[in-house]
Image (cartoon, rainbow, N blue to C red; front, side, top):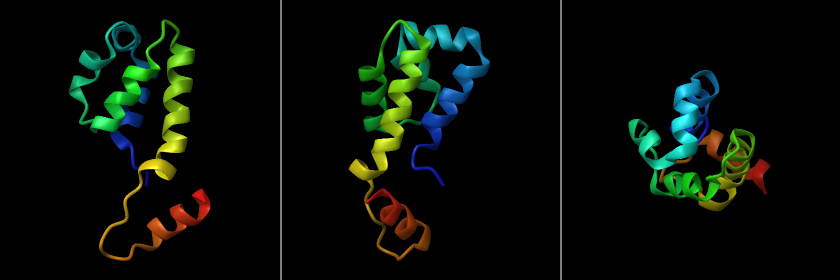
Length: 90
């Protein structure tokens, strides 16, 4: 399971909805208001702002790929899926 489900949902919406995609490029924070993004994900949107959808999507894709390594915090219970994610990411 992804740690960034809402951000991935935002990207999926942008892929299929041209009007949302244009709004996302023009004003990423207000366009993303309908999604429950973390503060880190909102910062990723700010830093990914460009005029090209391809560049914007590539920035977010790279951020999502790196995010588990940088931001993953373990739960108090042992979770085998979490262990696998950690081991693969190292």
